[in-house]
Amino acid sequence: MSRLECPKCDEGVVSSFRVKATAETIQVCNVCRSVWDGADVLPGPATTTVECFLAARGLPLLRKELRAVA
Ligand SMILES: [Zn+2]
Image (cartoon, rainbow, N blue to C red; front, top):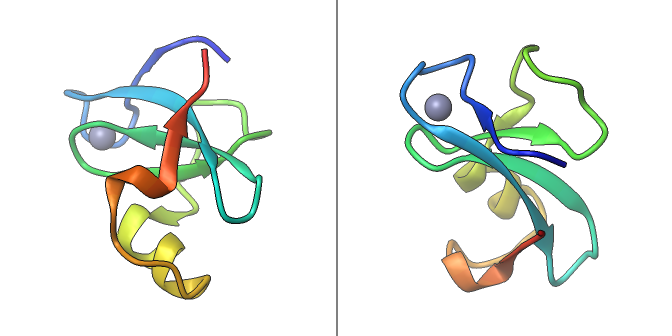
């Protein structure tokens, strides 16, 4: 997945990340922390935020839970 300008905040860059605990792939904005599903085609409505995404899975709110995907 390539890097994209964030359609939500118009400032950040959306990059793909692998969630280590669940092996899910998500797309995250580096500014507003909006999250899209890995299969979502941007621009589109964000699914959630990093905080809500991790909390919903019982994961700590730590950056290291995510690994950048090239
Ligand atoms: Zn953003």
